Image 1 (cartoon, rainbow, N blue to C red):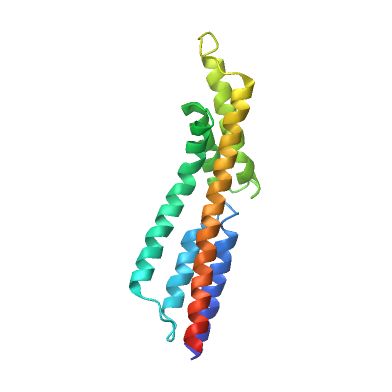
Image 2 (spheres, one colour):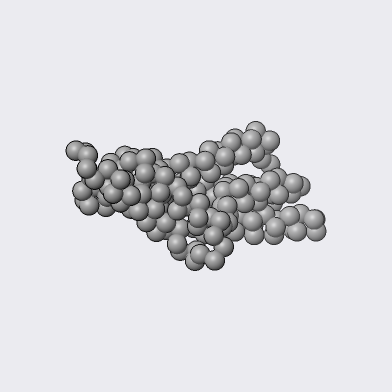
Length: 175
């Protein structure tokens, strides 16, 4: 019984950190939420199956990969070039690995990266007929920002679902 209480406390703490990690770039939210699920799996009266662990593990990998891909994809959908998409991706990576950068920088990083990438594209191709206007640059940067927000929402939905699933199983198993 004491081991169950320790496991429950650890699982709940991991699930809360997982939700926080949906917003803070240096904390991988969905993977930490999944670890909380795995810890809860070992509580003696929890009743979820290994199949649910497998399905939620696969979903965690998909959500994590999509979180990196969506900002670049949205930049392209909003008319951005490869330069803008790569700029958004580079800015996100800088925020992920830049320890001294403020946590809130992740919200502006894809916008700023796409914006700079599109400006560099304009500068390099200024003599060509298909020159982007500043309106196009702003639109592509907005696409990167929207993509980042979609990634955050996707991570948050996953992590909240895992939290709900674990709490439901703990309550039902305890009764």
